[in-house]
Image (spheres, rainbow, N blue to C red):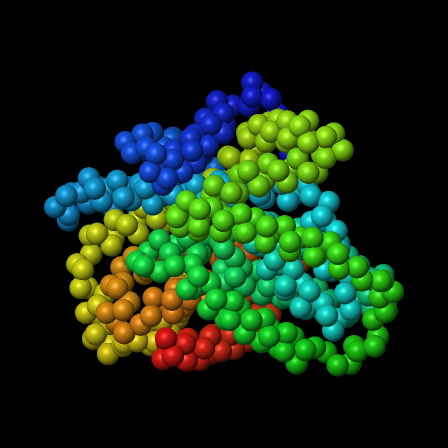
Length: 477
């Protein structure tokens, strides 16, 4: 963990980042609750200042997307009769996505130092081969709900450190096979997060761009598709396991204690439960309720880690720690804020600038209606990820450009599930996604090795499985 620096020890640019992103968070939440209106423009300005401050450290792909956002904004007056309301809506969407990542960062900060997370990680890794795939995949998905891609870093580091030659009984082939199978399990499990997590940006993007769609309509379909992918991955792992190595690896002599995992699941359910309670009490969308819940939940979680000092002092220590970590925490979100904010901004502008019937006419020319449209969206997002177009961008653009799915003979929940499923396959297969790049570095292989050689057949099989499921769901719903 980076050393904690004082405010006067960091560059002015870093201090600007550390202040401006919380301003975006507060103003966006107040605006979403209907407590302010014009003051939300302060948050929009703070978002621009944040991106300018972090511009030199933004990845080139993020910079390219933001330049595209500037270009689209300059074209807007020439293509739209009333550009200002559209521009305001684009800034609202960008700020909302940035707020989502900022709010969840509080939970991630608490999870990084949590002894409970470390105990769960060890429990997940130390399983016999027959259970290892399910525990690693399930653990990556479960940790991904709160840690996002940090779950891959946590479990990936623990996996590679534990996969020693001694642990493999001195057999290098067993060590290599374990590395491949455990890496596949982690990546495929993390890929389930867009389908199952109420905290995922996937759900935010889908709900923001498909009018009338509610979380309780699409998440059950996500769980169903995730269950199919988990089963398929487990079956495929067992099917392709090298038989000649069976029985050669040393047996694990450990007594399994599942209590830490039960505690972690209870923690996640408690956070979701509080958010659902706020949703019902304040009659607000679940995503907004999560944004309100996450910062306080992160603060309480940090305080519980210091409960030996008593509740009052523990909360004070937690607040002080978050304040000191601000110069690291908020600037570190530059990549997520840049690509999410840029994608949301461009998505709104393009949907306003494109002729309303353009996409509908294109689908009509292809003679596609109903569930076939969901399959087409699944294919486009997946293929786009393999040429460097992040699912955040492709899903934002496609979902905002499509007409009302009901007019196309498709249930909105099925369309949302198709986007979520495509996102799941993309993050577990494309060599250009952060998840594959991270695990490739940890496993010391090329991203294309993981994405294509190790995971290519799984991705193709998963695509066929999800296509069949979407067709069935489309005709049933």
